[in-house]
Image (cartoon, rainbow, N blue to C red; front, side, top):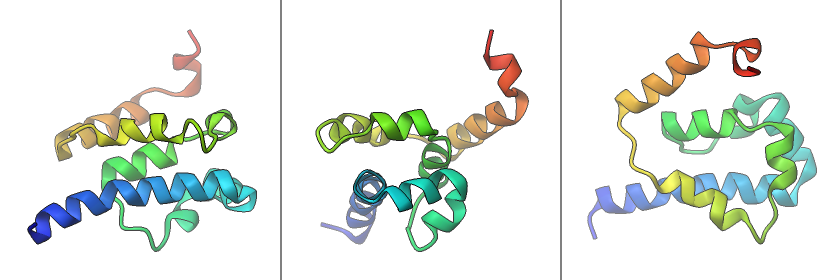
Length: 102
């Protein structure tokens, strides 16, 4: 197993670690919602993973349970390129909440 393979396998587990912690520790879950940058400090996450975790809202966290965490976590397994991450970020910047309510 190469260092590159190990690194790519380690990244998704960081997302899983964050989500498991948010489910088990309500204070951390609240911090993740209120100040995601502070909550995610110390985790080694890609830009796409950061976008995913920063986009969580209270309803998302309320739906997470130890039983369904694997299903949510599977979303992170998709392959993204830096261009995909830029497009996702651009999408967040283009639309505001009123645009998305339609």
